[in-house]
Length: 249
Image 1: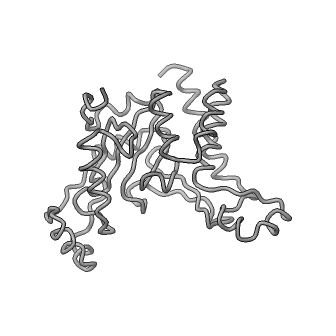
Image 2: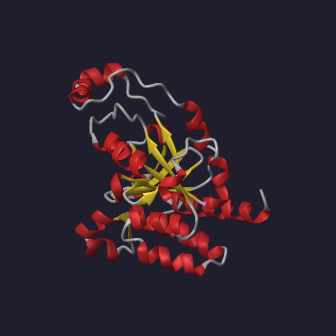
């Protein structure tokens, strides 16, 4: 790894941890809206999941002298999907589609397998974000738990396989080496940051200790989505299953 890339890795992780570890005067945007006068009087500023991500990425872009990227992500930051599209199409970042258990989503929602089958596998995209790699089945749904919830009946009614899913620990460990990524779940409803196997996120209804949270990816409640990885880390993704390149042509 050359010095410039090491510098980029350091700056992204530095700013990720800076906001995560130090936020005494921040409050989730929904709490702020409900009591704006009070929080303003106390000197609090509003934040949410996309604001956290934009703060970190724009600070890193600024430090390496890329003012155009710094300004552009704020202009596009009203949408996690549009931000992801910009990072991929304009800056050359690569997309990893993630799905904890393709055939047996733990919440029983068919949006997870359908996004994989009807978007990623068929078109090579996730809500129009080009997808290059896939990380799947890194948290198989427990069969007994699924039976108790009645999910296996739901799977069968939707034509999904009911056999057990094999844990994909190899690809999961590959992603644990990735120093930084921008995460998008549920078509942009939630955004977050990723570093070395962990999700860093902001809750818009939180304050103090409940505002920011760090969670291992395999325990993250959002079961599918994408992680957008800077191009200087793309070499770490080579062993992951690839989405057919011709789909992007």
